[in-house]
Every structure is written in structure tokens, then in C-alpha cells.
Image (cartoon, rainbow, N blue to C red; front, side, top):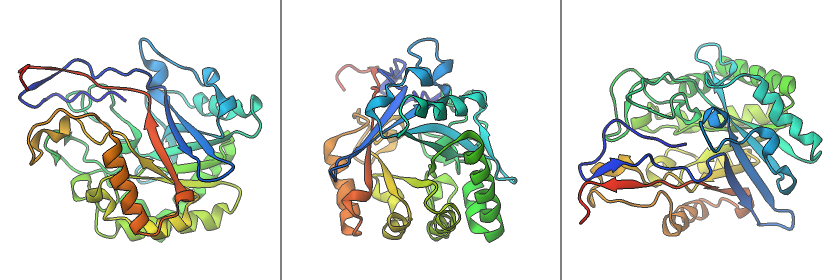
Length: 311
């Protein structure tokens, strides 16, 4: 998940934004006597030159759930497709891990396919979280440079499209043996990510219809941001009531996109406890139960060489 844009803030050059271990994202919830320990394995990990991890190498015995990132939601057809960087057989490799641990639940994380030019996403093209991004996007200044890919917005806005998507999804999960799905829509209603004002309500319509169709056979989760700027478009209380749990993104809080920050061009860690605590407070204020929150953390770090060592 190393992102290296083509433009950096004036006092910053990239040193590769090193990954320590980006093969897995760990999420844990210890609010009960039966805590959830969930890991996410990244589909493009096997294409790296070093530090790869195959699904068979994941230490599943300590996990309760495993999320495969990502499946894509195709524009127009709303079919579930593999990322362009890997073959569909990886879906089965992940779900086969329940032969090692029968109680393990495998989920598919869903984004939407977007074909970024090399100059925009040098190492993370076609990633799942780009579901509503423009097809060319300046991540430094958060401005679109071309048309939007409103796949999730378009799908969730129409009862017919929602029904088509849900039917495709259930068929996909049955074919590959997944136990559930995580919606990674970043972010409903966000004007800088191609969102529309109705997205928040439409997300809840979508999830309600998904739960009605899937029943107790499949798990339903969704990704939520830590930032009020993006969280404000959710009806988060209702979303939490519908879904089995929320995956709260406590990472990627800072990066090269902060170059125009009003407090100045700062070099900050991509995560910190203070901002995580503030994000959780937003959920408490909206009466979201602790038992519905999975705190997402990651096993990687980023580094930069500063052009001005006095910064």
C-alpha cells in the first residue's frame, strides 16, 4: 500500500515510502469475551519483488476473520471482478484457508475498478478504495483532473442497480466460498471523491437490502473514516445498526496530500493515538456501540528524505 505521487511538497522527496510488512492489515475488537481478530491480505502483494506473502503463509490459527482486498465492482454491470493485478484463483486460495482452521471466516473487500495513469498512482494503481475517485486525480491538491468514476454512487442510487449488485455479489460469494463482504466506499457524499449528497442515505438503503437478501448466511461490514470531513456524510448510527461491524481506518491519516494543510507543510506519522481517540469520540457521540467497532491498524511505515534538513 505504498503510494508515491508524481509531485511532492517543496521540502519533501520520496525515499520510497517503505513498507515494513504490508501483506496484512490487522483489526481487533476486544469488547467482549469473544474478541474478533481480523486480518486483511492484499491481492497485489504477490506481485512485489520482495516481502511477498502467499495466502497459504498467513498464520490463520490466531485469526477469527480474514479479508481479501480487493474485489472490484464493475461499472454498468455491477459484477464482482478481480483486480487487474491478480488472477481469480487467489479468491479460492483465501477461502481454502478454512481447511486449516474451520472456524475462520473469509470476507471479500469490495471497491471498484479505476484505471489510473502511471503518473498518478505509481505503485498502487487500480486499488479498491478508488471506487468513487475521478479517473485521474491529484492526490496532493485533492482536485480531479478528469471525469469521475461514480460506480458506488450510481449503483446505490437505484433500486434496480442495488438488486443487480446484490444478486451478483451473492453469486460471487457462493462460487468462491466467501463468508461475507466488506464495503470499502471511500467516501459517500465526499465532494472531492466524486460523491453526491444522497450517498449516505443510499449506502444505508444498499446495506439494508443486502442484509435482507443475505440474512445470517453472510457477514456485512463497511469501512469508515476517522476524519469528520468524510464521516459527516454518513448516517453512521443507522449504518452501524445495519452492519455487523465497522472497520475504522486508523491509518493513512497523514501523507503527501497534506502539503496544503492550513497549519503548514508538516511531516507527520500516518497514524497517531490522539487522532484515533478523537475519531472514536465522533462515534460515541452518535451512539455507536463499542461492540460494533473494529480498529484497523497496519504493519507498514513510510519514510522521506527532506530537501531541507532543518524542517
